[in-house]
Image (cartoon, rainbow, N blue to C red; front, side, top):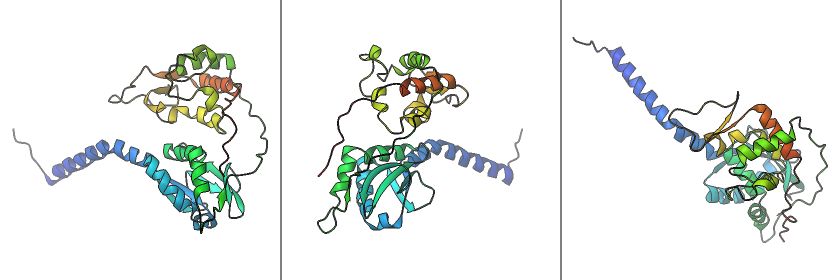
Length: 259
C-alpha cells in the first residue's frame, strides 16, 4: 500500500510540528510573563529619577522586570496622587500606589515597596546629596467597613480544614501550620486583605493545588496537584472571608521610621 505524500500533507505536518513546539513552550512563556509587568507613572515622577533608582534594585533582588509606561497607560502598578495606598512623598506630592489585577510580579513589587527594605530604598535615593523623597506623613481617611455576607462560623470550620495545613487560621491550629506561611491574622493587616482572599486561588502557589467549584479549571492531566487539593465552593469562600473580616489584625508594632 502506497501513501501519497503531497505538498499539502508536508505543510500539515510542518504546521503540527510548530503547534507542538508552541504548546511545549507555553509554560515557559507564561513564566516569562510572570517575571515582567508594567508600571505607569506621571512624567514628573519619572523625571525625578526615583523610578530609575528603585526598579533596577527590585529587579536585581527578585528577577522581575518592570516596564515603566506613561501615565494612563494600561499597567499592573499605577503610581499617582489620587487613588491607592500612600507609599512616599516628594516633588510636591504624596504618591499613592494602585494594583490592577493579580499579576504575581506586580504583587511582589507592591509588597516590596511597602516593606522596610522598599521604604528604606526610597529614602536612600539622593540628588546632589539631598534625599528628595520621604515616607508619607498623611493620615489615611477612614473607610466604611465592608460588609461580608458569609457565615463566619462556617468560614472558620472550612479554614481550619482546608487552609490550616499551611496557615495558622485560629488558636486551635497554632502549632499545626508549616511555619513558613503568614497567619490569617498577619494577612488581615494588609490593606487589600479582602481582595487577596477573594482571588487567593489565582495567587501563587495556590493554583497548583486549589479547586473552586464553578470557577477554576480542572487540573491538567500532566500537572496533577502536588498535595491533597484544597476544594471549596464559592459559598465556603465567602464564609472564609466573613470569618477573616472578624479577626483582629496581628500587632506587628509601630511602622518603622527611616531618617
